[in-house]
Length: 389
Ligand SMILES: *Cc1c(COP(=O)(O)O)cnc(C)c1O
Image 1 (tube, protein in one colour):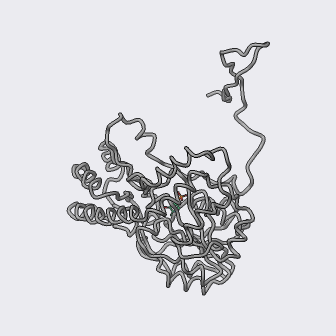
Image 2 (cartoon, rainbow, N blue to C red):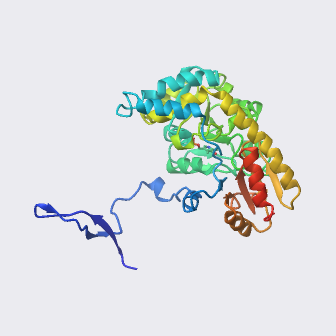
Image 3 (cartoon, rainbow, N blue to C red):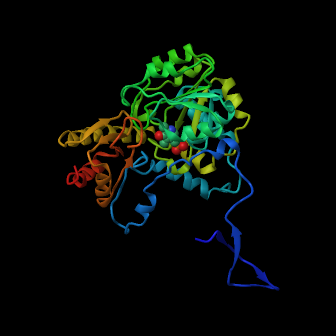
């Protein structure tokens, strides 16, 4: 292999621009290197089935069950609101509403909190990133019980944090003892996902309350990306403790993953601290309009939540009749342990079913994670799965 990449450059020759791009040699090394905390990072492993699905012939039904997205389109009201906005005379040429003011207003109703407790972000990943950037310094101690959502780990690492990942006896139990053992008075952030991805573990509000109380100088970061499915929340604790931040998203139950809207809630002083590096125009106009419309159609949300609950029973009945070991979660996914994981994944893909390999997570050897959608979709998925399981 040669040591050069060929960058395409359109060169002008004389006064006419040549139609043929000329190739220029560009060195494959750059003298500009990333910061020391970034240098050792391994990129977030973003394995998605999107390319494989796009390559499929049109009209072939596939089931994208690998990223826990909603399996149905967003509420028609979302699409109407976005279309109306685009057609309006402020279309897209203005910057978005700064700080997502109107969406914040809608979120005060949805969460029961006041606007000074809330910040809207570009997906909840952006909230996690902002929290790390605001509160972490190189060498700071962070506790994140494993297995967990890896994107947070990347953000904390990029700030140079020293991350402890305590493991409990079973990945499907809340590992409170292991967490308490790992915590130190100087721990800067304790990251809890509830329900946890990929295990579905829930940290009930009374446990989170106790952790906030016993570790007053630690920021308890409660990631509730799947809150709507489980309906169990610690968000009220932000009015009780000045050391908790709760993050949520429109990407999962609301079906707006493509719009990138999430939010965080915390004590007003924490929100103030986060506002220092927060970019008030980071949430795009269509995201704000779409998320607000989604909150105005909770009936649609609730119908989808009911579908997923019913579909989980259908999937559990099916799995009960197979030799696979499984763990149904309170979120919108199930963890399934099979004997021959790679073969199973291949066979599922051949049948148009895309799931996520989670076998390299602690305690999850030979496990895959599968999103649960509607009852009708689940019945179709089961028809295809029955020759594999
Ligand atoms: C999907 C997911 C997120 C990311 O959500 P976005 O709002 O789309 O950035 C955050 N946390 C967990 C645990 C998730 O599973």
